[in-house]
Image (spheres, rainbow, N blue to C red):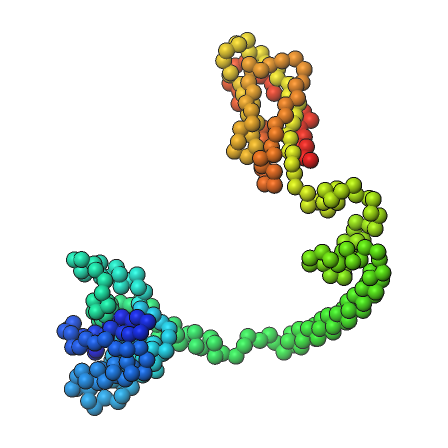
Length: 324
């Protein structure tokens, strides 16, 4: 076997040839393109073992294993077409291999060519077994070359009839749509506001007519642009207020220690915490501005805790979210 490491750059390739024992046979820098490929073939031919002399060209080529950090491009395609065994190796694997086997870890083109040659020489069996490339390639080819999946003949005929019917229906609908668009265009064009609607970006005749139908043609229906946006549901919120009425009744007599608590939250933010110290007669309205979370989804929650002795009741009523 011959093993070649090919460290490629935009305009050249640094290559190194080694034998099965890891002995370096040759090292060269080859230009990108036809000239470089010709020189690589000549370099390989020059170092073929004598016992390969009687082998067919295809068999000899299969005994040449090349490692390169890419799986595409005319150079790689030419190597595969020549019959060589080509392994595309991830550059990160090359870097890790260099770190393990070099004291400095420094990168160089010639050094990487040697690393690539060593990887395919030492790891080719493990890589081939792990990937099972030939078997997987055969399976994929068999799947891709097999006839398309089919249903029984009666089922296929039924599906064909359904598809033909749907195609005819779609064609008829398209014709009706075209005719309707002509009617809409003719009548909408007569409306006094047609030019205004059609001047808006993205509005054609049909969509303009739909919007006119939604808003109506009474120009005094909406006091201003914001009123129109409010009707369409596209206005932004400038004020969000969460409010509720709260009554706290407690049998606790302390005036210094909060034994029982009610916590009000908007999402993860605590709005307020009430306790037995806030007990009072009647209901009190509590309000919290939430404009900062307008436009987002927030869960409003009440959570209470109570000790095991005297009771405290937190009574919540008329919770409301006011948006304007």
